[in-house]
Length: 445
Ligand code: NAD
Image (cartoon, rainbow, N blue to C red):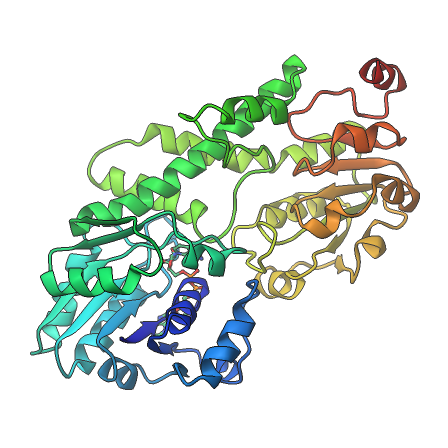
């Protein structure tokens, strides 16, 4: 099959590359020349495991091309996939400027029958709007489909090759047959729906995942008060098949380019229909507050944070990605600086992106975890990179001036902490692992 993918971000690039790996001829389009130049040289502009190798392999084998010329890509293809961004507007609604612009350009470029697929996350009714825009700009026939994307950053390639399901929302017979054929090698679980339901499935899925995270974070906050351990609670809950264990990891809340914007957008979609989505509003509020637990926990140990050196490990919103959009680290740093703390931050991959997105005066970005923690007054773990798990708490203790470790992602177990003198705090776990010898000895009994 011949495909054009418009937008080479996390979704468009990964989808385009994976389709080329399946044997299709793919042309990826982006309006950013610098991105396309880098891709033409076989280098991915984003960090995503296994992506660079696949880009190079498929360029070499002649199935994958990159261009800024949308019309050429469209004219050479049978299926056009729109994967441009739909970021939040200030009021939380999805900004559809990019998708509408791309629709206009696709319409102007059509030279024969094509299938137009929207992979971007878009409010219900957007496919119909895109249909209208394309129709206004072409005489040629086309069919539309909504094929929402569910990949996760950090495991995007593997998710694309092993999806839980594929949703195809379309009323077009040709589009249905062609898109089933395209996705069949990935999974047998292909669900055909009407377009509006497909658009809604994406928002409802993300809203549900966000709800699970905020739910377990609230349970964690209660666990702290009643002396229960949220990691045990989540394990016990998750074994119930009706609940399931994923997205029950307490921490400092969700971030990234999807859950924050998609929850806000769904609240707005509901609001426009005079429906007050109270549950989701609470999910968003709980999530926002959760990140500030780091500050509360630091203040409970150090009192005044002014002139204290605070080491932060993790700037990306989650491990295995360099995406820093809506990362909790941003507001945590803002609060620390407001209180006069000296911030030393480390991330294995995301420092450059973080610096580009957030212009902080006075944050010292380090090249290693040790450099950031050395002689600091406290260390806070904000992202659960494997690199951090591999560093022993004893080593951390030897680096710090005062032995305070706030583990915002619960990466260390009781056993790892219990034999150190660290004043350790984490999310939703009992106070006994805080360097208190009496409590430690009770645990060891
Ligand atoms: P992104 O911001 O990383 O990339 C979007 C790309 O589109 C940019 O490179 C931009 O230059 C390009 N672009 C915009 N307008 C264009 C035009 N007219 N012509 C050519 N290129 C154009 O976005 P993303 O994270 O890949 O997300 C894309 C969509 O997929 C969003 O709707 C998002 O909600 C959804 N989504 C994202 C993820 C994720 O994990 N990032 C997962 C599922 C769904």
